[in-house]
Image (tube, rainbow, N blue to C red):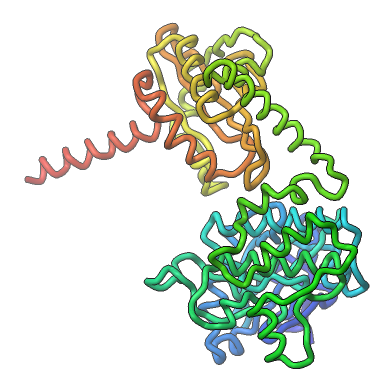
Length: 461
């Protein structure tokens, strides 16, 4: 029988369902194709009755919340959720390459391939942690590959949010797959979700390079004992740098286990098997070292950051009344299409000359170690020196001339992680520009609403 209500294989007149890709206790996953765009998708079909009878309804709700929260290049994307009386449908990104498990089941992979997968896994999991999400079931079966062999973390059915922590700041639900689960989870005494995920990532790295799990025994209790003691042996073909990293990740004590930040600083993670930096990281580190050396010689001035771009004059672009109207919050339609639009950009007006505004923005670039990639026609493009959670952070600052005495400045994220951008905006950009800003756009709207509320209260009294 078709997974869709009735006998048709067209779901909600939007997706045509095809072959079965996989199945679990409560759900089946089918290949699908959009009837509108012909885009390939994966459709997870969940049986409502089974979920309700087993008390898993909250898990389904949490999975939806989590997948909407963690949008990252190496995480399966949730496109939409639909439902009928008896079923729930998750329409997700389709990973043509299938499970990573199918690849490692054939044996170990080459070191350069393992390095690529491991970097992408760490990037995805670290991003989840930055959003207060802990996966708790990281294993090759829950890691997919797309058509270009890029890794995609999937299946957040057992994930937990930071809000799930008890008063002791720890998680207490025992879950995961025995061979990949951290020792503190087995002991049921409460655990740090991030530390537990790091352990599982370490097991995945071992499996990629060895072709088998580090902790294995026919007797489950004996396997748990080995996990609790951290007893494992690396094959002789493992590089020394990988061994050092694995012993730090598979440390049975979560208190001394390596952090994600430290993993990213490890030699093998950064350089890979050939000891040659990945192109963009090498470039960033070269600039960083140049900045560091320059600052030591110039007592911390970091002037190189403000002179990275070509010295072209920044002449503000003039805008007319129609442009001003389009920038007004009331006429901005972007909110209809993306909820986070306002999180990615901010605007303010200033009575200061363009040269003063530019000088302040360059001051911010020096302070937060951003290099200026481009300086022309009223536009300053700022870029981070090191890769962030979603690539290199890039910020555009564009100055528009409203009148010779008034300028409108738009600051927006053009690449990278929105939270990293928001942190710089809140802690560095806004405080540094405080004395030259006439009004921030959002603040002006809030002030008007506040004044309106006060006037209403006075008229009522």
